[in-house]
Length: 500
Image (cartoon, rainbow, N blue to C red; front, side):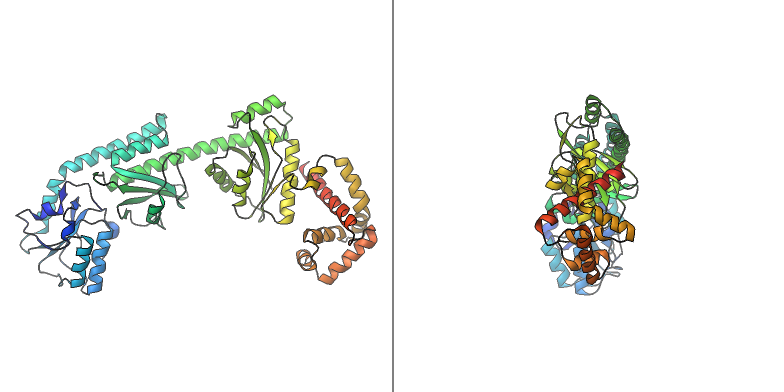
């Protein structure tokens, strides 16, 4: 990792006052030195920013050959410019293994005479990089100008972070913990850099060739800022990267606050549209104001959870990440979503665990939501019954017919199921639900009995009793078709009553 200093290891070694001798790693003499630091730790790498010359008297330097090699490899992986060791004191003999590793990696190991104090090396480096320190300070001050750019609206996120990249001399990437986009227009790490993302926000900030820092928001890190060096470009250092991460966190907080305001306004709009009887032009005006295409097609989706709780924030984030405009309303036991028609919303919802969703048929902007609401409720009930993550109304020809003619539905239910319903009320039995469960399980006795928590023999008895009471033959194709239609009509009317 090259630092942002103006001094190389070779130039430092050529200083006659320091009298340093190269022991290994000659091919790395061109490495730049940003700082000189004394460390007697066995592993100082978590606390390094890169481009340091590490100086040691040997107190923390291991004696075993394998451990010596691992020590040097850790420093090299952390981007250290080189290692300066005293000729005597506590320094153990350097093994052939560690010298070979230094040569292979181009990692300079320098020997410092006992007569030369480490402070002399530190002063030499400090003098060389003093001008560079001024550049770093200027960069840090200019980073704070990004806050003004963002709050004033002069530049969007893409433009702001492009400027910060030029200012810092680093390539900047921002992503979620999983590597997905976090801020619009700001690039995510390419595949070859994904392995640099840490598994924990407590990980050291230095990685091979750059820095990685968490972007802190309420509730924990929202993602990571990865800042990578560019060949031949002096960068502004870790402190500037830390300030850029703060700018990213501020912008993300501002964006989420704005999204929450829009979400609340959208919930109020959707609640009003679901409850009211507005003229089409008023509906269209409000829907377009919410960000929808006036010429587009919409769908209403009802979402429920198999465990009884819909995480509204999770749904909103998933839809927003997919770039789908939407309005969302949470009621006591149901979540309504108004969004663009098409398969994308269904695919997003199917990817979320434990959800059951039903969508209406597509409809034009300006359409009253009464019928789409009934369609979505029916489809959600069907998804719940069948254990499916997503059902679109209209995929079932029976359901498409049932919604339009409630009077005929009641007549159908009465003629096919009326006797069995009366029997259930009188005897507090469960014949209708038993037949429905059996049909929904493809007429398989084992799964149906398990779903009803009864013995298969009890299931067989109930089915025979249903045939006797209803006069329907469960081995007859025509009777089964009519029975299934009546049960779907009953499910729809139950939804109608609940909705009303």
